[in-house]
Image 1 (tube, rainbow, N blue to C red):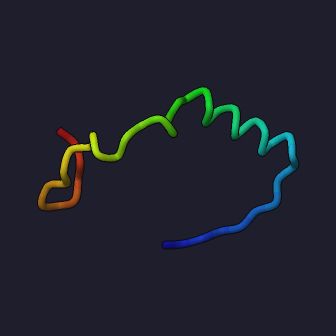
Image 2: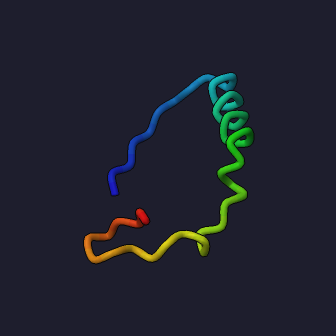
Length: 44
């Protein structure tokens, strides 16, 4: 995994948190994802 660091203004972090909260992505359950196929894709 490649990790990068960046410094951003507090207002940028607040906006990113708002976008994530609005998308409700944190409410998704990983158990509901389909199992990966032989090439590692999870598309149906």
